[in-house]
Amino acid sequence: MERGAKDGWSEATARAIILTTPLQLVASLLTAARSSQYGHPYMPEFAVDNKACVHYSKVKDWGEGAKGDWVIVGGGEAGIDAAVALYDNIESGVITVIDKEEGSTPVTPVGDEKALVDDPSMSLAPRTKARLKAAQIDKEHPKKSIKVISDHSCVGVSRCKKASTYTATISKNGSKKGAGTTGLKAAHPIIMSTGFKLATSKSCVLQGLVEWDDTGRPILEDSCDMSTKTDNLFVVGPMVRHVVPAGCGHEHEHEHEHEHEHAHEDEKKKEEDKEHVIFCFVYKYRCRFALVAGKIFAAMIKQNNVGKNGELDDQGKEAVKNVTAMMDLYKDKGMLVTDLSGATCGTVGSCGDSC
Image (tube, rainbow, N blue to C red; front, side, top):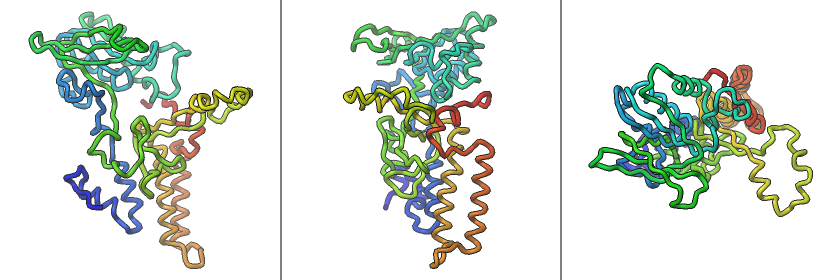
C-alpha cells in the first residue's frame, strides 16, 4: 500500500493502515476515530462551486451588525443553530429557513407532544429548540425575525451582481419539476446547512477501506462497528449509523400478524419495518467506544497472551480483568450500547438537557 500525503493521506495515516504489529488494531481505531465529518461538507449539485451560496461550515461572518434578509437551506440542528446565531448578531432583517420536512418537524413546537421525536438526531435538541422559540417570541427586536418554511426544498441558487442580491429557488415537495417554484431573495449569500458526506469526499481517509451505503455512510458490522471491507479497521464517530428491525424489542410482531396474507407487499413491509440507530452526537457515539475498545483488547490478548495450550498467561488474565472493569464502568454510567435493537427507543435516543 503506497498511499502518501499527496493523495490526501498523511504519512501517519498511511503508517497506521499498513502496520503489521499487534498495534495494528489500535492504529486503525485511531485513524477512523479522527476521520471527522466537518472537513467534508456536502453540497447539492447545483450549489457546488456556486458563489451564490456557502456551506455553513465555511461561514466566517455571522452578520455582526448586518442589515438585510438571509436564507438558510436546511431546517435541522445546524440550520436552526445558524439562524439563531444570525438573529443574535444582525441589526435587522428576516432570516428564512427552508425545511424540507413536512409540518413543523424537526422544528417541533414546544408543548406539541404529538410531534415530539425521541431522537434529537431526527429533531432539534432541547437547547436549540428553546433558543429558536426565544427568538421567535422576542418582542424587543421588532426589526429582525426568523421564519421557517416547511415542506419545501431548495432546487437552485443564483446571484445578481448588478443588484447585489442572492436568490434561493424553492419548490414545494411533491410538485412537478419546474412547477410551483418560488424565489426568495437575500442580501447575503445563501447558507447551505446541508450536512456532510464522507463518501463523496476524495480527501476522506476512509476511501477504499469501507463500503458506503446509499446515504454516503460507511457500512459496518453491527456487533463492533468494524469495516465490512477492511478487517480490523473500526469506525467511531458521528458518521456511524446502523439499520435494525423496527419495534425496539416490543410486541412488534402483533402489528403484522396478518402479513403472510399479503405476500406481494413483503418487500415494502421489510423496508418500512426498519429503524435507524444514529450516533451523530458525541454523547451518542461515545456509547460505542468501550465496545470497540473491548474488541481490540480481546484480539490483542488472544494474540499475545494465549499459550500453545490454549490458556491465558498471568498477564492476559490481568488484562481480561481490566478490560472487564472498563466495560462494566461504561455500562454502569449508561455509556455502553451493545444491543442495537434497544438503542432505537431511547438508549441513545434521548438526551434531556445535555444537548
